[in-house]
Length: 202
Image (cartoon, rainbow, N blue to C red; front, side):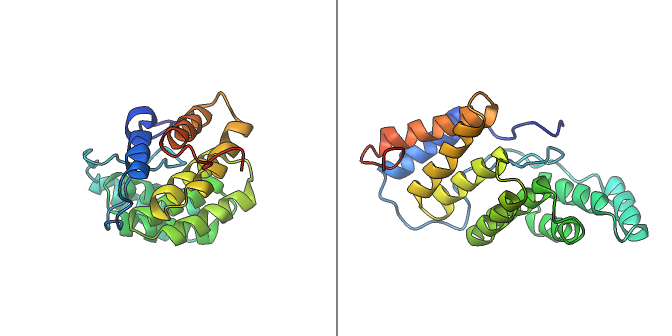
């Protein structure tokens, strides 16, 4: 997969869920995240609810583990292993490899954001947000991070105003990008569902 791919179907699924959630009873969250999140690097693709995990290629896993062992200061094989486990929806293992890679390369916002996404998928929204904040300290205009920040604030923290602020930044930075279009759909969904000042003119 290409490194610039958007890895969830935004238009119909994600923001329909936002609208339904806002209009619903806002009942307590289950242990399963409510919405798919975009991975920043595209070796891994955030699986939508009900989608099929990609089976692990055990031969490739062993090869990458060997490379990682032989190169203790190389973040790349560890990030690739994290991506593979993420694709397989084995998020704790993905976190383990992402954390090892992050310890070696804390300046890669894509890696940092992928780690945050994995935290979210293991029902750790606060850690996800903290990780996204680190990504944005490296690159304040990293649109995939901002898009994910909005998703996690909306679904993980029920913070619709914070979600709107993150998505507004995406639209301001890259209005015509896939991320900008996704963020705009999110803002429209919030406005339609909660017109009493969730976004924009606060």
